[in-house]
Picture 1: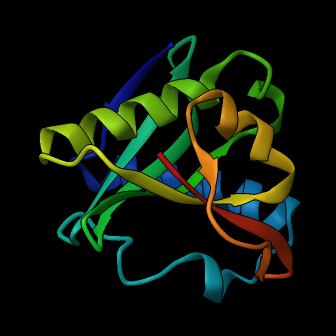
Picture 2: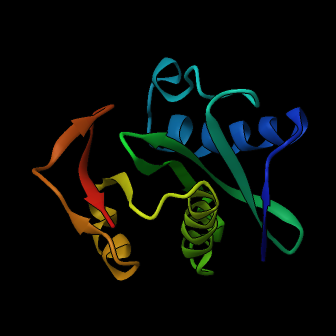
Amino acid sequence: MNTKQITEEQDLQIAFAIRQKVFIEEQKVPEEEEFDEFDTLDAACDHILVYYNDQPVGTGRLRVVDGYGKLERICLLKDFRKFGLGKVIIQKLEEIALEKGLSNYKLNAQSYAEGFYEKLGYKRSGEEFMDCGIPHILMKK
């Protein structure tokens, strides 16, 4: 397993296809809410892909928001959620944030994944809220 910071449009389209499968098809997030102005190569945002046996199976992105590295759009294709790749995505996004001089991170975790993020050092910050019909929790590290 390895990661790649996205610098080419074809890789960005692969990331979008993964997000389409996970968020729109599987979790029923409306397409107009999934994709936004940060989904370009020239946006103030860094996108990554994670690979399993040379196959792209997950993605995530990082933005700088209020002095934090904000981890967003983190997802893995269903068949690849048992190999520790979620941790790999988080570590790579944190590494990119550190390269930008950021050492504080935050993310809006789907509530069911709170334990996963806690194991990676994130702590709940605030009350549960709904986003796209899915319960979420703000978490910080």
